[in-house]
Amino acid sequence: MTYPILLDPELTVAQQYGLRATPTSYLIDKEGNVVGGTIGPKQWDSEAAQQLILQVAKRR
Image 1: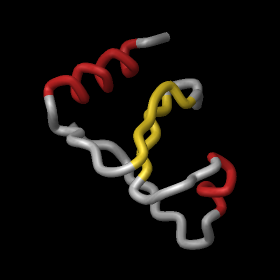
Image 2: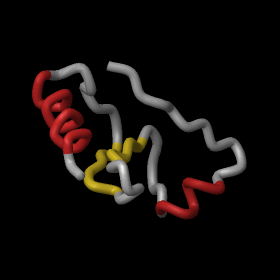
Image 3: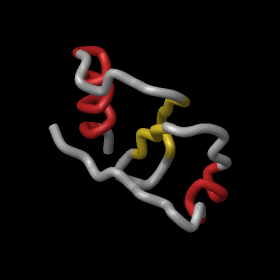
Image 4: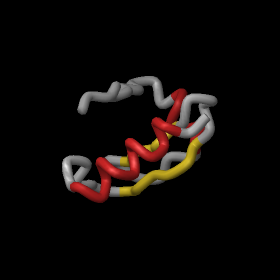
C-alpha cells in the first residue's frame, strides 16, 4: 500500500492542523475530513493499521 507523504518546510499545513509534534500522521477520507491520526511513530504496516486504512478508503 502506498500513500502520499507531505513535506511541509514552511509549516503551513502544520499550523492549519494544529501540529504539536513530529512525526504526526493524519488519516484523511475522500472528502478531506480528518478521520484519525497519531502523534509519534506508528506501525502503518501492521494488520490493524492496514485494516483501518482500507475501511476509510471504502467509505463514501
